[in-house]
Length: 316
Image 1 (cartoon, one colour):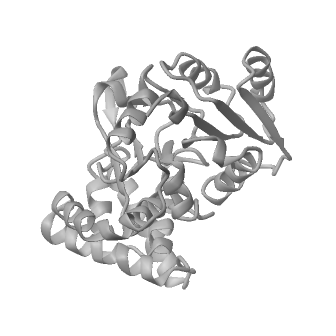
Image 2: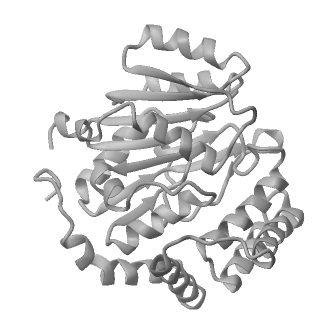
């Protein structure tokens, strides 16, 4: 593919990100391959975010700011996706080859998007991809957020346009950034993230801590796992693993509480029974065989589904 096949667009929902957003802006501006366009949706910021965005947009004509009315509070999950779709409505997907939902509390390495596009061009089945998030722990130590290789992370959700359209976009609910990966795999696509120096990025706000506090974030994650239809035993194993990472036992317990509360209250679940069954089957097999073997088996089994999807001439 030539450069005309490497047009990518970023969409960034944000609210009250004055503390971090300049780090993200600068790290995107200095990318080895910059985006064709960057739509930043200001979701009612009340700090200095709007002024910072106006200054950068005035200096870079490929940065466009879309102002959204103030909802009165920071919104995660459904609120983020709602703002994302406001940004999506401001562009034509057919003008681009790749799309990324990008958070603005990140510091990206300089070749981040170049490498992701290289890998997508090398593998036409690669539908969504990302690097790995790290944060600064005690004493400034570089700490991994331990995201699985079989998922693309929600902070930099990078998609081939044809895959994004094939899965029907994102669901407006907590766990949207896990549901999309399972849906892509169900449709025969490959999803990956890599833990390599040129793809490791600094998450300036640790995962799950963006609303109220990190324990609320962990409980919200448990609620989202119930919505997605996760197998109870698999999720319990996940929560136990999270107890080995800050905030340790209380964090894992908060996840279990969120899941149990959703189950007990009869909270609604994803309105896609076939996908819920697909997710549970994957999780149960992963408990028996491990994730790597399970993913390899699923990708081999689901490849015929991808083979009948319409791809562009450049992708074939």
